Length: 238
Image (cartoon, rainbow, N blue to C red; front, side, top):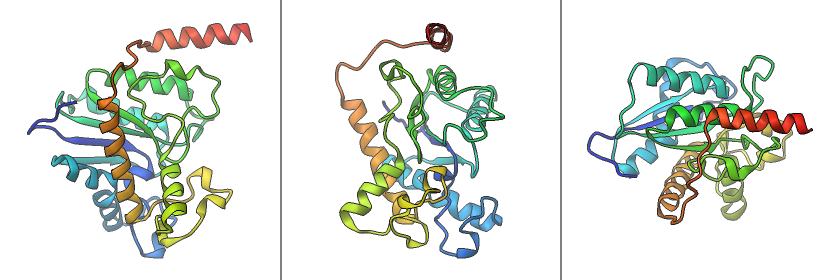
């Protein structure tokens, strides 16, 4: 991956990208649609800011609180349709909970992954999991996933849990402790604080660097139609 003077960091995701949890004012702790001041505070200080500093390029935070993966897909497709992306850009997609709005979704987790991969293939892009692995509960051959999906069985929340256990630093909103012990944790009920988002920027930066340094990368790529055919054949066998 090579960046240029024209490169931009473009980040898509849910509240874990939008920066929910940055604020210290408890009035907005559970509010996905707070006043614009809080929205801008979150967007401007989430991990995209700290990651863009490392690359020394401008960033656009396209995360949305409460967004599901189909909303993320729609936002990215709209940008592509309107020719907003450049081949110089670095695009990072952080997946939300795979079954958020499942009763309204048109596509399953595997399908949405490959639909995104198809439209993002011409660009520098990487996929990460936010607070829950996209394919954790899917019966799918992980060797078939796109090579740009970094640590598909790991998530940002795992990074922060590990960090808190190791260092005892505050990494969660309102400086809470051991939030992963709450049953609501897997539903995206908790978010990082400012320190947590800075830690995530370090993680993302190092993982992209490691990914680009790995030799003998998997070169087999599958199209969306091939994946759908694979899923249909598998379902017939079952």
